[in-house]
Image: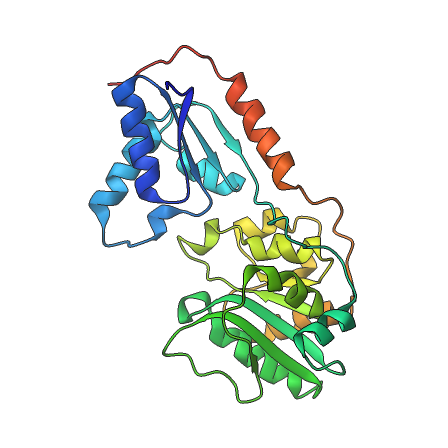
Length: 281
């Protein structure tokens, strides 16, 4: 077969190889990224040089948000690029009864549940969440922290936290719907500033209030809800934003794009590009 495009997605190596094979066989290449891969393994600079060179040469690039697309396009001299936003897995992320979800997961029904889903790692600023919840509990004793994901070996969870371990994907929509508020954490860094957390999109699809670290990426996602963003590494600000979010009940975030809609956007972009490949030495 002779494909129209070679697409490298989901990791640095795939992007580099997609552009390399596109050039080798005279095919159009597209590199897609959902994170700033240059924030991974910062000591591995030869890999990042290859990545930057592949971005410069590729026919087109796509990114999960505008700040990331701008970073990927720095040396592309106006060559085509497109924002392809994150969309939730179509496995049941929708608004449903909070109490029914709690019963299904055997979670307490009479408490305010603040949830965290993902990597429970120091690099995500998890200690700030622990401090914020402890601060909140001094005012609202019924607050409980619920966590699921991968637990870093150096992390010690608060004694009253509910640890659910690593849950199957099919259970995450239930967990999301069981929460009063979801906390989405990151650090203001070369990685965090370009991270577009899919957990935010999942919470929005479930109409669950979510509080996120304020970064250029989350400011774009939550452009209509800046009151739900807190200053990085500020436990007091996080506690205040969690208090506000708990009082909001459910939120109508408006229409959330599906996989089909995002795929259609990408297809339209690919079909709009010239079929004649312009090569670069």
